Length: 348
Image (tube, rainbow, N blue to C red; front, side):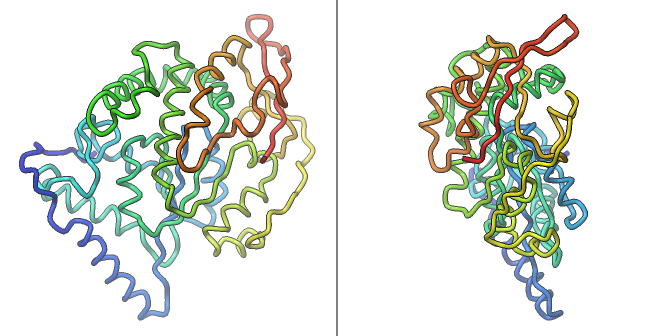
């Protein structure tokens, strides 16, 4: 894990981005001399965890080397570019002393090693305020944004107790600190109090990350792959990805610019398959939340959807609400019964 040094001098690291560009150009020239092209990595960015990123990774693994959250996991919390550092700064403002000699070498190598004659993939979720730095490091990379209804994310977290297992309470506290000072203070309204219920805190984090992601990619061409669309039609999701990664068209038999409307395959999924699997197409999704829990998630989401700047990656447009496309069901559970919401996926 790469740590940061004392911030020291306020002088930006001299020529950091220029060094990265220069090294990339040397690699590009060498590839062209061999009759090949140097390709930047595909950035797979999630509005949250549990948005179908593993499905996309598994789909692409036969044709693409991948890196799972290297920017989030390899930077220590005190690194000046870490999404967990309340004093984080954009990559263009990071100081040479803060990086250190080894840290600078690592950052340059981290970027240049993701270029190759065969495209690589970099998956990142929950980068929050570190998103602009990652995008600045890969200015020419195609971007795929992965999203999922807040109800679906909350259901997935609840079924596996992920809020506690992954210590999301600490993540929420970190975002409180980051939105009440410095460059993130304008987002304080999205994290309005210190100790909300777990599902409310989780939803607020998804709202915040979605807002930040939408703003960060506003000027980039992207592919948007909602989880709800991916489970409805694998080919439709791949056709969206082919728009920004055209060489995948031949590898997956998907025509560029064409969104095939392949019907869902027949299947009778069990609860585990119904929540997590994207192998079998589905006509409906089941959200395993009580009515009160679903109401809390929807209330935490309401009001911010319309305010999302840039591209609103809100699968709330997929009619994941009790008023449109969802009905309450009762399913067996450890406590005798559990309330779920059966929802019709839509790509609209």
